[in-house]
Image (cartoon, rainbow, N blue to C red; front, side, top):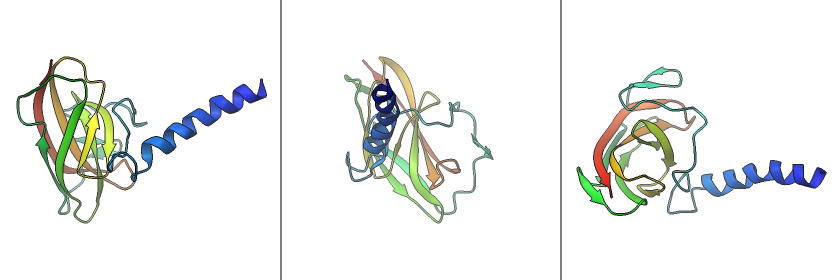
Length: 146
């Protein structure tokens, strides 16, 4: 029984190690979109963070390059490419699909997985190193998965 408890406790730690090491997965902070951020779900239209409104961008910007507006993707794996300017506060981006936080990315590329068929809105928000302070540096694009 003690060994089973150890395995149950060790599994989340091992998962965290594989999903947060930025040297793995081409700068991907969360290995795939199955990773769920601990801060709950935020609706796409809400301009708030866990602690309130989006903070000033302070030079941070993000521009989604892929997927393109209204692009049709024939896979549940959505390749992301974006330009990130961190400014004074920015550290990484949070990726929301239809208002649900699906992953975090430290580089300028990544992949979301498990996206179901249908029309979706991808929103990237620049976030400070504390993972909670989302900045008013946002870009959105709609796409379709077939």
